[in-house]
Image (cartoon, rainbow, N blue to C red; front, top):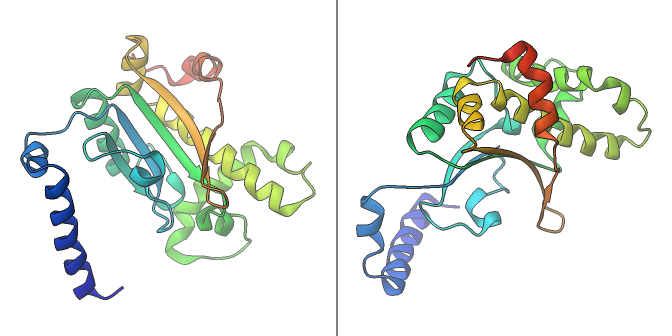
Length: 208
């Protein structure tokens, strides 16, 4: 896409929005009250608002390579703090996707330079679930399962934060793990048992 085309597209987008609602931009300026924090992958083929059918102001979005939630990542921690403590979101969604290049790279026995520390967290997910993954002989199915398990573990990392623990205790927040299948466009709810996970991890990670 040429840069000039982006600005032309922007002008067309403005005209379309104003035709639909002459107060569209005035409403945007008034602020945001999203109920969902979406933590997803930076992959250019996966756009949070489009796959969810969400409108501007409905979803607070944070994206990085392979939808990671590293508790030492100040960017991710700041987003979670702001979304939970200030925007008062009611749901946090960690959404991975099949055909994820970050997870694929983490499965390789290769030196990937600056990506090594980032992908190490995904390799740690493999290590945690090695017993299950090594039973899967089909490499593509193993790859897909690692994507799902990575989502689960990033949800666990979300729950490790004090802001989230406090909100869950107040029954004002739920955490969800999803996977987007770009081969058919569907969202898959992994239906992770967070009550059990919360009970298990709070023995060690309780902060409140």
